[in-house]
Length: 111
Length: 110
Image (cartoon, rainbow over all chains, first blue to last red; front, side, top):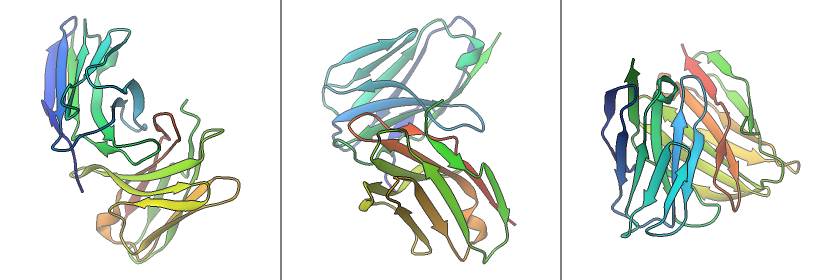
């Protein structure tokens, strides 16, 4: 099935550092979502983006909906140990439609 | 807590068997989505139901089927199980809001 290209695949960073990851698609999406998944749990919604160019923050997290509608970016500022996990981008083309997921970025934070 | 409930949390069975996974959506959500997550494939959409009717199909095998009941809970039926069916199966619910996921059922085929 189709997957969005997400990079980097994994990151090892030190506590306090900022993190950037992105997601690209060959198709246009109307909504971009960012999820975080911890081991043994389901993906948890972090940020939802609904308009091209939109920039939205949730605490230390900031995400942007690319102007072309084919990409999105997630930044985490001043990382802390609990930021460890796998971050997934996801897009969908319309209301109540299926999500297409990115391949995930695994984030590891060292003290 | 996402409000989406999945049971069982773990399921261990043998090849050739049949299992049923259950999902209760968040209150007020009419849509239920099923996804499969395996190590090498990421999260793959299987099927969507909306208010009891099938709305969209993804990469769902013919050995798999689903249904949504009048109370909006959904069941995913997996039959003639193969080793490659071992994976995490997630249910999500939503509507006009972004989808929220349950904690999944981990299916292990021995």
